[in-house]
Image 1 (tube, rainbow, N blue to C red):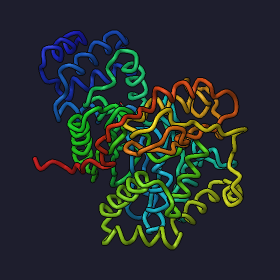
Image 2 (cartoon, rainbow, N blue to C red):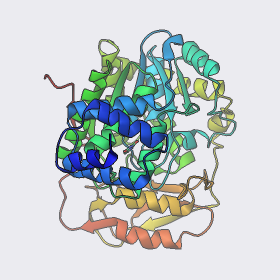
Image 3 (cartoon, rainbow, N blue to C red):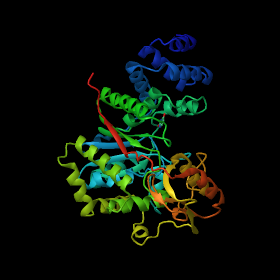
Length: 431
Ligand code: URA
């Protein structure tokens, strides 16, 4: 087999066989295919796409490139959720405790933030002592004992994705539906859960800019799950503005705790409850909405979060005494005119939080747990000139963030149409 022939085949829109896809991935991972040829192939895929068989073959080869996690030592149904990434997305911190307090199991491997989006692992590390590197046995034991553990990735899951993603990032081939679906689903399948809910973001702060594109991505991922014997459903959700109010590590943990006490922002609460409802439904729980209401009202979901923190070495007194990391100062940002908020650019809000030190531009940068932004307005709100619309939690300078906020938030006399937080649900296709 010659790589150039396979590149030409895909360039001309001809289907690749599973043997050919196996050859390409195996030889790329082992270093026998150079980046320039893989780049050309990725660009051909970007333009010509992959059909269902090709996508499934890609996922299979990506999965086979590394380790997989066998969760069979955990009793019962193992649930998982995944978000395609967004700003202010701290849903795992709320959904995990809800699911576990309803008696189900969530064995979650999460990532760190990079660029304008945050990561669950960084957020949890804002709680002093919290250990994200449990041994596999301790991870299984904790999930069996209390229903939940959230850890970073320890095994070498899907090394093919690490190589391919790095190449896609520098060759303009990230926003390809089969490549994104293959990348996300190979990692989800390698993590071992039985039933998965995907939160596919759409909007200015997401990879997918239109509901149609997001629907195609979601359907592709749900169908991959089903081809590999997993029950997967997806929700298409709005990422035109940041989710909830808090953006920044300790700030997001605080917002998650408020939400578990029933006092969270409306959009964030609605999304967390709906994803939890879908997970409970997949696990066969009847009246899932009532169950969620119950564990919020009787505080068992909130207490489950504290139980998880304690089990993973975190100091819960910091939470009980309001002693999570605090910044040196809080600067108010005020509305420059009266009118309706018509736009809050989610991606730029994420970058502003990064500028304050809440995120990392490079993989090895350190981050400041105490800083970030608290949005006091949502798209559709009416504000008066001089109203406080953002709190800037800072340790060093905030001047550049103030300048950026002038561009990030748009105020107009015309009332905008408010987009729903959840657009639709995608289930396995019938064919
Ligand atoms: N997230 C991933 O893990 N992979 C992609 O390709 C895009 C988003």
